[in-house]
Structures are given as C-alpha cells and as structure tokens.
Image (cartoon, rainbow, N blue to C red; front, side, top):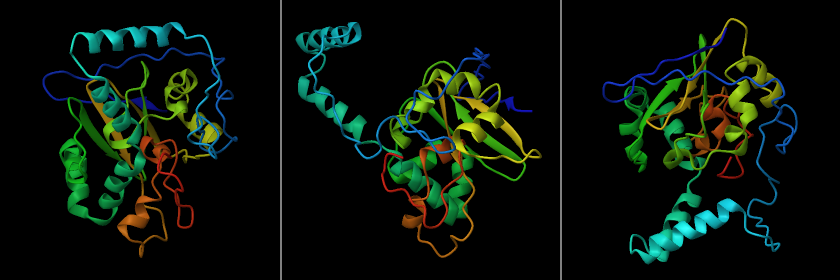
Amino acid sequence: MARREHVPVRGDGVKPDVPPIYDETADFTKYNYSKGHAPVPHNKHDHHHVDTTPHEMTYWEQRIGGLSRLLVEKGIITLDEMRRTIEEDQSRNIALGARVVARAWVDPEFKKGLLEDAREASKEVGVQMEETDLVAYEQTDEVHWVVVCTLCSCYPRPLLGNPPAWYKSTAYRNRVVVDPRGVLKEEFGTVIPDDVEIRVIDSTADVRFIILPKRPEGTEGMSEEALADLVTCESVTGVAHAKGPGQARTNAHY
C-alpha cells in the first residue's frame, strides 16, 4: 500500500496532504514514448526543433507579451535582463543533479550531509535553491520513494532543470498517488517488489525533493564523472532506477 508523506518544512508549517483527483480516463498515450520506457516530451533526435509556422497568438501568448511590455515600459526589467533570465532557465538540466547523486555515491560524508540538509549540500556543486527548501530521500531495500506535484509542476529546477512533460501531465499527477506501483511498472518499466513499501511525496511551492537512487551494481571502478552519466530525471524522481554500466545518458536533458 502506497502512502503519502507529511514532510516538515522550514518554520512552523507542515506540508499539506493534498488529496488527488482520481481520473479513470487518465492516459499517457499523448506523450511520445514507447511502453516500458521513460517518456519524453518530443522527438528525442530533434531536441531543439522550434515550430516557426505562422500562427495567431493564443490568449496566453498575448497576455505574456502584454505583461512583458508593461514591465519594460515601467523600468522594472529590461529586455536584455529578460533574455538572460530565459537563457539561464533554458540552460539548466539534469547535469547538476546528477553530480550531486554521483558525489553522494562516492563520498559518505557528502551523502550524510545531503540527507540531513540537501539545500545546503547542493551549494557544493554551485546550486542555490533560492526561496524553496530541498529535501533528499534515499531509496532502500525497504522503501521506494516517488515524487509528484499534485497541484501543478513544482520541481527543483535550479538543480534538475525544467520538469519533463510526463511529470507535468494530469495523467501522471492523478494516477501515481492512487496506483504508484502500477504506474511505475506500466509506464516506466520499473518493477518494485511487493515487499518494498512505496511512498509518494508531494512537492509544494515551499519544499522540493530529490531522490537518491541506489548505486547500480558493477560501477565500483567508475569515476564520479562517469557515474553522473547514469543519473536521469526519472531516477531522481523515483519512477525509474539509475542506468547501469554501458547505459549512460547521451543527453544532459534526460
């Protein structure tokens, strides 16, 4: 039986337990991936494709454009500052989070600090979590952790980059809190033994999570840099295991 955790955050508050909205029609098929493999938001062989086909601006595009012009006109921000912010946001990816995991695998003291205060430990790789807290949980033989954001798409972006499309989907957010074991097996090909408890934790605006996956077998002689290539966004959110030797990531965004 999966259960959702109440996780303390900085200050007096306690992370609220938000009930999921169950939807029996929830479906992953609109996301481009093969059954049993980690879903990706678009053609993985064309990561930078931009649709330049002329189209009428949507309501949200018009709204964003209007707000941007007002901010510039009032001197709150410049176009150059806006451009740099967008470029910085787009440059973030799994690489920093992968370095954190790899270091924890090879450095027991760093691992201890990460599990005690992940926000502080992340500063060692140059990551500042700004206003949000960061909590790390370790996968064990007894408990398997899975991260979700039931309300929107809260995600440790400074550490992992932008969340993948499947993480933001209504299908994932609705289903994983109801049947995490089934979702992991059916959608990601991840089989969790029946004697292992699955705990689903809910990200909020105040606290984000990173999961420390088990170090893959057969990696004893690998360098920290090589180990980092075995870490994916799926493994640090708990929906998949880290890759094994010979299965290293070929792209920093996955």
